[in-house]
Image 1: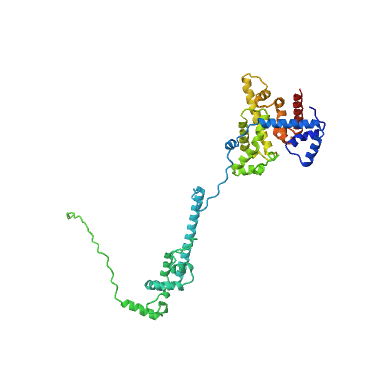
Image 2: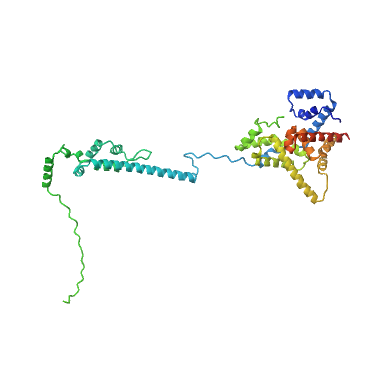
Length: 240
Length: 185
């Protein structure tokens, strides 16, 4: 078996066997083969070798190989959503607890600050004698007085009976509203006959005080008598 | 040749399948094994391996997938698999040689392996051909098998066996001449 002198064609014979040649190269090799016995014999030899290799190769169990392969790299798990019944990582729980603490602090600041503002404003409006007048004023009067007070959103919410509030945590407690009502200025108190303390002049006020003085004294509940048991120890006096 | 071109029944390239496997798709691994296992088995047999070929092919895939990040795509995935399998074969031969030396059995490994397959060879021509290939040096045999059996280019063969493109060409032509001379005797 001789070697053909055309090394370029001989190099391409395995490519022809495996159909790896483009159209032009394939046509050129086939044209050469039609006239070259040596290359034709070599191509036949190559086919025999390929047939031999394929015949001797055992069948491979693909499934067995696949089962022995390592698992693919781990895919990162998606972040748990709200409502998922998955375990919440410690870091997430700590963050959630911190969020609650921040919300509570904001609520405290808003409520405390609002009450301080309301109390401060009311203190400026209180006049001498106002506390006593307010103390005797009915609750309804107090409520109406609140409406007449300077605009204070928190106080208005309390008047409307809002006991708490929005989800943001900015809350005004009912206690705050009550405090505002109790501290309303004296001129807002109704005396019961249509007139107000603020409408009285100095002489009328004096007259009113005199009438109050003439009223029978309110019986004072005496304190329960305390029975003291005194135990004395008599010692004989010896006169010295 | 569609197999070695990196596409099979899935119609995805080898690189696409590797990316899918890395993303968690185990079916991509099945496709890669189905696409290249037969070629690896042929190469193993042509390299003189007759025992536990399926185990060798499996070891090749396991090692490849364990070090898949080392595959840069500079060569084809099949060429990279041939490289891995060839290293495994060399390791096996060294181990086998040590064992034989210990047992004080001196034999021509290649010809013995091929002679043992006489029953498989159907006729005298195939038997002679098998013996001719078996007489090649290990490197000549690997180059010859990859060129004839798999249709790899000299560049791909050079990558697989760790040599230059020119050296691979010389190995092939020397192997071809040696086979012809044996058959002409």
